[in-house]
Picture (cartoon, helix red, strand yellow):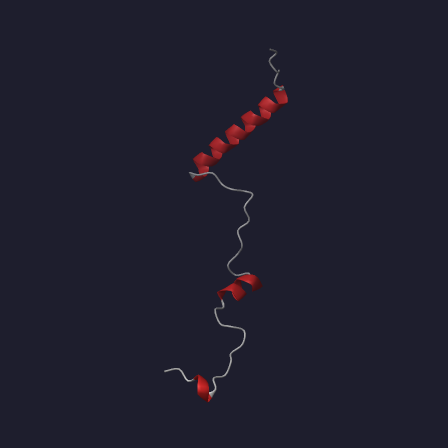
Length: 69
């Protein structure tokens, strides 16, 4: 069975990534996620505001027959 020969470019990229991760751990104490977008709390979000409202969109008036005891 033949073994695949790894490209030196791929090895260099992997070494650079490893070094970057190690520097990040030294600087911050944990790894930083660059892909996840964190929304600002000050930005208006219509969907979230609608989900927070627990009130029905309309209220039905009670008739004398519907009195709650």
